[in-house]
Image 1 (cartoon, rainbow, N blue to C red):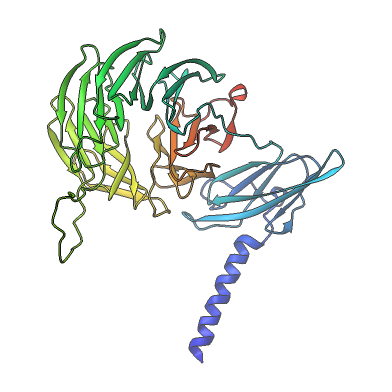
Image 2: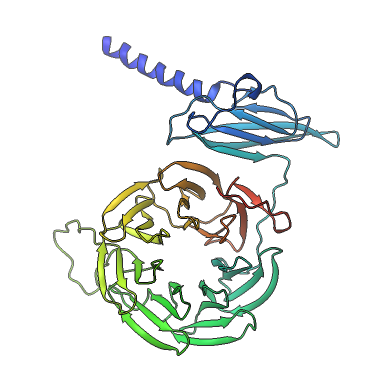
Length: 443
């Protein structure tokens, strides 16, 4: 009897806590001081028509005006909560009603614009979007589609500047003068961006899985993920001469990401786990296999193996911090892991969605991560684990393509099953349009 009463009491306490977080009306700014960072509350900014009525989780609010600011009760840091927000207003004599679900977290700001009409993604490709890349000078954008067409854009206006015959992966040279892409004719092509002329053709069995220019722009690293069932290989090419600098098979199976260290001395490669050969005899007593390291670090001059890093079961994207001391990986099952680039020691991990993360990018100051979390959610998080912002991207794909502009302002998102892409302001999570770019701000 006492046990039943105790269980009932615990259940009621949980329900009361949930009601306190989600059921109470969000506080009006006139009734309290503006919260500061560390108060563990979430700020919600709504942009609505002047005459709109607004409800949070079914409870009507009292504020008026086009810009309305609310604060949640105190939240547990590191957790994500949701509010269902309904807005109703008159438009041309007719009642308009919209409902949005807002994810909030402690010490973060969420903005929702009910007045902005929903827009379709920019969809220039007939096939699915395969890859996208911003030029390092911030002036150009390149997108690759499944129809074997690469489009070059002027980023400020999204005016098309030209097209190339090819597909992803894509890579700009550090001086933004060259663009590399793959072709289905077993080659990688390098084009001069200004003249739109091909300047180099490099052999590649089937199609490359990742391309990366060295910091000097003369060498191009190419991952060939289709060269074998158990082993892949990395080839470093001299773009000027078209000769191979080295070839290394010391890379994980299914390798799909390669990055140069900031000083150009090392190459980090991420992949997955080995598969059994088809001609192997089946094991009558199958035993679980030990997880093999999914990250390797190679000498960028010779291709010699320097270190194997355990990584997760699969590593999809890698990024070095600007000082070269830390290697950041997205993968699965843990979405984000942080590794000491010199020792291979695990430094930390975060991400609440245990299904893994594919897309990953890092701001130029090395302090903020932007990555895919959950089912088509974009997450902006500090390297110390603090969540800054999180929003949903309307795509049909299960994997997001992410690319961040060099000024850390514009995030491109697309899906591997969608032909289009969208541009976002990562400081607000609001969709961006080329003719109305916001002033430069860091997240």
